[in-house]
Length: 98
Image (cartoon, rainbow, N blue to C red; front, top):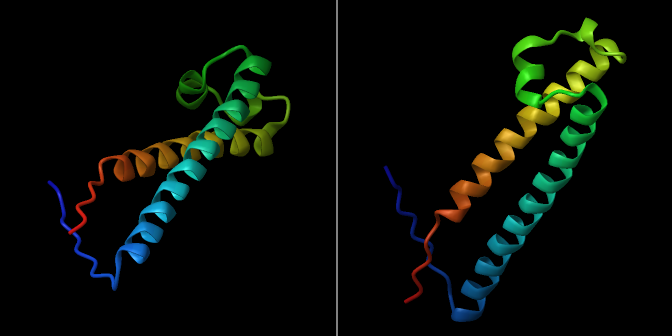
């Protein structure tokens, strides 16, 4: 399913500004994804397991940092999912300037 959104702008300059703003936001999403993956890799290296296995099998008691570290790791994993979904959605956007 796709949704069409029409935005009427006063001139080409404004249209270019909107397009650059979307491209800039995509770049920030990509940077956030890289940072989040780095934080996940740190957890994975420290505990010698994947994030998928951590989420499926581990509890806070399995981590040296206990509840706080569990929440941080799980939160980073959820954050990555959300960032990737958002970036994919924007990546599917098509612009048609008239």
